[in-house]
Image (cartoon, rainbow, N blue to C red; front, side):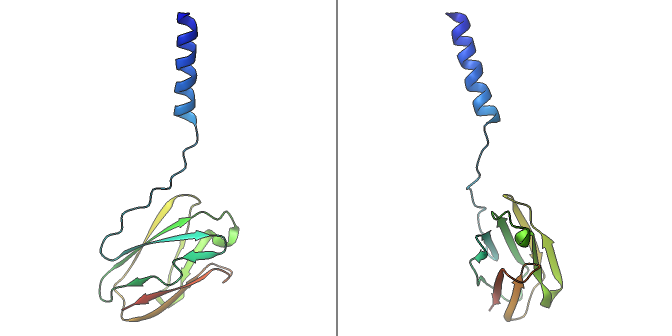
Length: 117
């Protein structure tokens, strides 16, 4: 009986220790931060709005395994980043003037616009 209980506890330990965990937790957004999810061919939100004159933090969460979703490029500010799959990646942008700043994947299929007011 004791062997069965120890075996059952060992199985429970192994399951909980090695079982894949899905992270649906979203990082808490601070004043000029924005979480952008990359999934199913779109950026969500597609047009994030941020404050002008302050540094901007964009956190990308890439859920799409497509090679097209691997990079994000901000041509107007000469910034690009490789996005890991299923991990949050934080991108810092310098303070920007009011305006629209398009961003896209390397093939220009995923598109969004950062709106700075």
